[in-house]
Length: 258
Length: 206
Image (cartoon, rainbow over the protein chains, first blue to last red):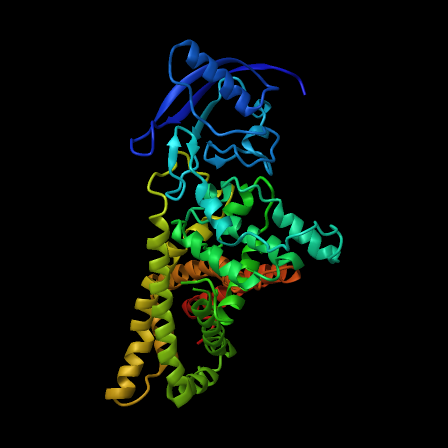
């Protein structure tokens, strides 16, 4: 693909903190290379803002390799931008042409309060994981990794669910701000492995309870989460969570439930 | 939502089967026979109470879910993804349900309510077939029925699959099967319903 430079207009959400009202600010950037990533374009903009003695834009990022789940942003209405199965950091500027206007907003959900500008607090996900996303292990010497035989099909499906990087794009995309795709991926990947069997029933009940407590919406099977998920987590995980949940509730619910 | 929805889907099948008897074009003989059975049988009349209860429950559950979910994002997006990542009818189940409800109020007021009133307080069952033939001579009523059927079709297009998904059944090989059966059901059943007023209006059946 041929290299080219572009000038862009950016409408970026600026918000001091969770208490204050946010608003859009318009910025112009010049000489953006088509080979830059979207976040590199933001780095250029921030350098420009710093040179102008203005406050740079706060945004989340870490590995910039598409695997850590830290980057976010809703770009022209779509979490992680327009590319399929791609995080914001792996979106490249060749998507855009000279003169384009791009609207950048934070992931919006009451359960993800804005920390500053485009950075949101996604610790609600951590608390859902803490509620049940763990396995019990014996102390002592580490056991051999292959000591428990796992059927190939289950291993593959568990791996596909475990591919969830917990970025929160599902919540951002969902018209109900529901966290079902995330929670179901985490429940699924342990439910399908023998290592997850001891806590199988309590896990699903406790994680769903925590999810509701965090103020996420209810799932109505719209499917925007699956469409926007950078890791291709399937809606089948939600069906599995529902199945696990019903099974656990019919069995008396969580022993840990208050 | 899923269990009440599936119950209402079962009702649709029965309702559609019975009303499709008019297509025998036998002056309403087959239809009246079944309608008489449905209107007088004790078991059916008991299930009818359950049907209304489930319908109301479905509406209440839907409104509660809608109210709960819309409160979860107080700061709205400036740019909406729209149909890029989801279907409009999946996002508009509340609206479609409301349209169906408006239709249902008129529909029940036209056939069911007067018939039951006549059964309870009057001279017995009303000639439903003749009533249908008369009502469907008015283009306005035919239009309203088509509007109801179209709303139902879109509502089912999401609702059928969604019910099975909520019950954890839309998995593996069943996922595509349920989706396809859902699409077929959502087209065929409302289409048969829609053909009833059309057939009467154009005089295809007498």
